[in-house]
Length: 330
Image (cartoon, rainbow, N blue to C red; front, side, top):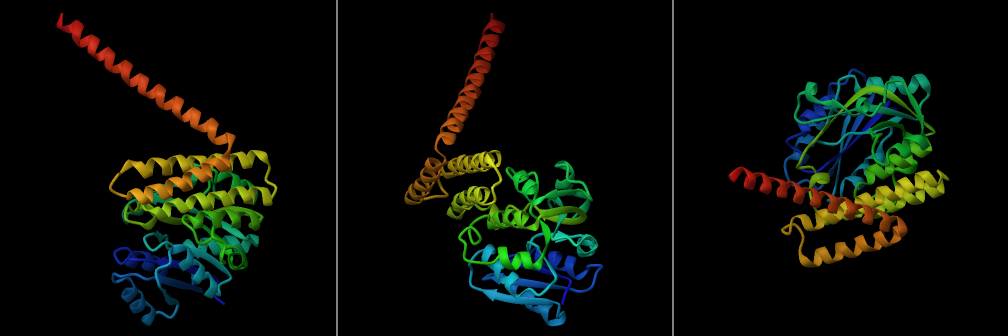
């Protein structure tokens, strides 16, 4: 049995794949498997994956018609046989001791979840990346409960890149739940796993998250509105696990902020969505907004008050400039 299964969903990532996969092939620990699920790529991604798997039996390639990264990861988890599992995006990469640090930490403390040190940046230079963990007070060796980790994701002060015990992934990251197969489902799954892991320990294993404007999650499309359903499931999780009214309010505010962001996106660029697409998306927004009830009314009022204050300040500044120019002309 492999110590760790690395699951990678791949879609049109041929420009990043060599660096990403090489970061796994160069790991300082033995006993891992890399499961690459090609999600219907139309570039050279699949050819590259097959060329690697032919010379390295640790790399396994699965193909499926384009169904989205969530289902690709789910498929990979289904066939994984490692003691632990971790996901790696096809445009990201990891440090050479990534798996060694994660696995040794997990075994030493008999852990169910080990948090990575998430480094964010652009390009291949590791030195240019910034630690999300340090910015958010997530220090190596510290531990938090699953409930605490869940709450700190509202909004994201804890990320979801972890090494998970495989049994957790098999039970909670695979299935027909719409939230598992929806937009930003990886965020939903991480929160579910947090709640079932019991506790999470923080490690120094570095995961380099590449800010890629061309990634699926960066592209504006109607798929983004699936986040509304996913977030509504978060509120249900709070109730199911009895996390309390304070956490429930945070989950509802998180949903409102998502609605507000999507509303702006919907009308920001008139070329992205057709009239009918906007109408359908607006119906979704209105339905989820109504579900928030009084909370939405309060937040909308505050948002409008803030926008009005900003606009008034701009008018005042412009008037001051006009007056100064007029007086200067005298």
